Image (tube, rainbow, N blue to C red; front, side, top):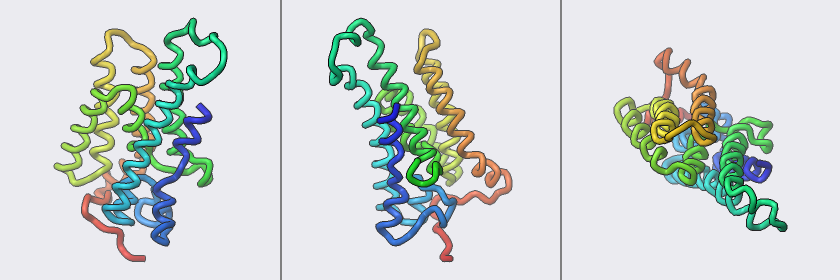
Length: 206
């Protein structure tokens, strides 16, 4: 979990902003994630932040799954489910690392891209369902937060529907969905007030 947190805590959105001479925490929504990087820094930087934030979630899961093979001793052989559980725990830690990065005073992003990277490894089919939901809602509303909230609800729903019985993956998906909604609480307030930024709406110069 410590390795997963450290992988997830790398603030690629903030670092991209520094490359362009900007602190995206002071612009747009103040978030260091993909949506604000896209709004403040442009399409190329936003795409780069998306890919890097996604990959750090996938990397955390991959490392955790391989960990038992790298450690000495045979104590892990008696528990074939251990690599899978380690993967879930590391993925959760990576998302928390992104949302509450230690490098920026425990303030980070909303975890959507990093969550996608985690579920790309542990439940790719359910991620595809969530991605389709995101694209559909974002397209018809021209609002990234609406797509993210819809995907955050559809992902755990899809995971639970595909499971024969409740387990650690289903509990994890539900926890991540609730966390994503919580992290979007300010977006929900802006949506309710009709003040949420739309796709294509650029950051106003300060």
